[in-house]
Image 1 (tube, rainbow, N blue to C red):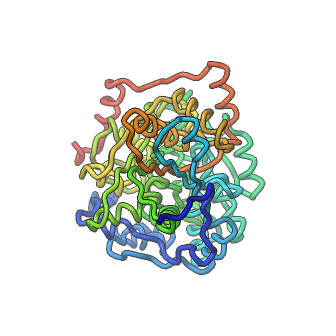
Image 2 (image 1 turned 90 degrees about the vertical axis):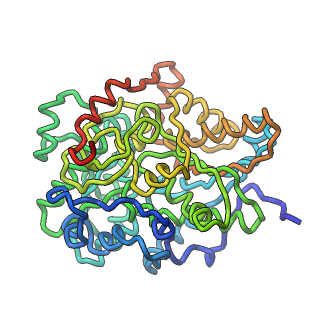
Image 3 (image 1 turned 30 degrees about the horizontal axis):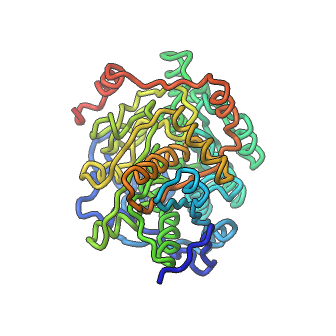
Length: 457
C-alpha cells in the first residue's frame, strides 16, 4: 500500500547526495565535442584551463564517469539549504479540478532565490582550491550573479559580474543583493571591454544578451592574473552540479512509490532542466523506465523549437569554444522579455543531443500566458514564482488540464527554480496590461542563422 503523500516531502540530511550524476556518461551517443575557437579542433583540457578552473575544465570534458564525488566543503554548504522540499500541489490540483497529481521541486529556499547556488558554490570552491584571486561571470535575470556573489563571499573571492542591460535596469534590487555580497556589477554591453564597445558601436540601443555578457566576462578574466571565468548554465559541468535537484527529487518520489509520467522544466541554457531530469533520463537510457520530458522555452527566444542543430559560438564575441547545440545564432538578441534567465541563443550540448534523438519534447510559450499561469499558481500555492519558473508552471497546468479532459491520472513533476520577489516590475507590467508577446519572425531567425560559422552550414 502506498504511503499517504504529505504536502511537503523533506529528505533527511543524511540523504543529501554524496556524488553528482554525470548524465553524459549514460548516453550511448555522446554530445559532440567542444571545438577550440582558434583551431576548430576538439578542445583540450589544457586549453579550457586557460578560461576555466582546472578541475572544472576536467569535469567539462568527462563523459565516462557515471558519478563524481561532491567535495565535503560543498556538501557542508549544501546543508544550509538542502535537501530542498518536493511539494505536492494539492491546492493547484483542486483549483484545476484535475485527476492529475502535480509535484514541484522548490529551489527558491535560499537567499539567492534559485537553483543557481548549487553550481555557484561548487565553482567557487574549485577556484579557491586553485588559489585564485577571483572570478568573472555574466548573469541574465540576476539569479546566477546573486548565487555566485554569495559563493564568492563565502570563500573570500573577488566576483565581477556583467549583467544583461535590460535586467540591470528592470531588476535593481537583484543588483543590490549582488553588491551586498561584495560583487562588482556592470551592465552589459559596457565600455569596459573591447567586445562591449564593438557591440555598442554596432547596436547603440541594444538591451544586451547573455551571449554578449559572456564575451565581456571572458575577456575580463583573460586580462587579469589570478582570475578565471565561470558560467551559470549551458556547460556540462553546470548540469553535473545541478543533478542534485533530480537526485533529491527521485529519492523523495521513490520513498512514496510515485513514478512520474511527465517531467517539465524551463529551458534557457539548460542547467535547471538538465539537473532535474538527470537521474530519470539515466534510467530511461538504461531501459529501466520510460518518461516524458518537456523543455519549456519562451516564444521570444525559441532555441529548441525554431533553432538549428549546428556548431555555434557560445558567446556573441566568438571567443568561447564552439558547441554543437540548438541555436538561433550567437548574434541573436532576443526581445526584452521579462524572463532574462531564458534569453540565451543556444541550448546545452547534452540536452541538444537528447532532443535531436527524440528523447525530449520542447514547447515555446508566450510571456502573457506564462504570467497568467504564475499568478494562478501564486494565488493557490502561496509561492510567487520567478518568470523563468513560470514557463514550467504554464505547461504543467496545460498537461493537468489535458488530464481533466481525458480523465487520465498522470503524475506531473516540474521544477520551480526560484522565487519572483525581485521581478515585481514584470508583474506590474502584466497587471497593467503593458506586457507584449513579441515573437521573432522567420526572417529574423534566418538572418541570424546565416552568420553561423562555416563548418555549421
